[in-house]
Image 1 (cartoon, rainbow, N blue to C red):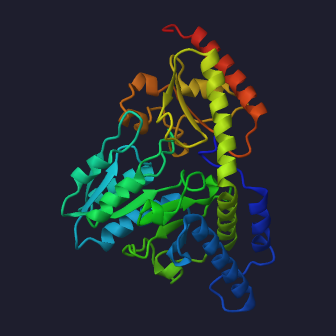
Image 2 (cartoon, rainbow, N blue to C red):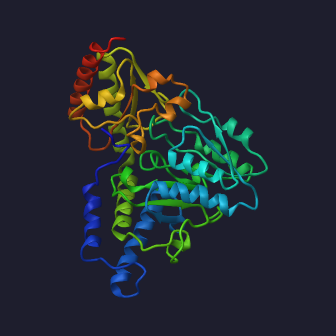
Length: 378
């Protein structure tokens, strides 16, 4: 139950990839038949990604994953628009791929405004508009938070950005494939996604770049692949896997989302029925269907994770899983540090079952009760 960290590869996705890991091993930049076969597969996948996002295939650039896409969007647009200004707006609850990139840009003459979030981890569009200055060239806000599942009003924020002529990027990694993801409807100029959050392989992702956006400056040099924005030999098998995963998401999003939502609510109900002092983190309704982030007062999250021998959950972002400090997202929401250190994230996915929910609930209740019994302060 840690599907926010990564998901298993869907059997249909693996089946689509295998030929490009074995017999169809050509370089998509080559002009001989092996290369043409690979290039055709890449372009098919580009269309599959575009269909999920409701955009043109020409607006999709393949990358190595979400972190690269976030860096390419933020750093790339910042430098592409440097003559217009040097100001970026984001929030204190973003993924480190955004926060760390903005902090690195500070040493290069860029300024970033970090907006607060409310008690649910949501950005207020009014705060965004107030923060815009004549030097603002880019804003970046995630579609849905990777730790607490809260869904941001990015369509409202995008409208504000457009009104002021500011480019808007969204780290849409957790939202795409689970939430409506038509880029035109959402109104974003750039959006990051990755395959391994939607039952595809690791090491492959994409950046949506609207035809109305400036082209980001490339992070790399050497080769003209992906319109020169992301040079380098294409990961054909990975790209095929991303395309297949996007097609599956498009075809089954609604039904599978409802199933996951039912399982999540069942798990939550079982836990609050048998345990006291559980606190839900994030918005109670505007949240990802599979996300359940809970604080178990009096129980350190790392101790709970160690006690759950057969259950995979996390303390928050998998990118920061070795840290013992409180989540920066929970801190930004105003949750006291002592309580924030008891947070556990359950990330349910399409392959979880009702039987697993029963097992997990029983195991969590047992471990929490045992740990609380031995906690002097409890």
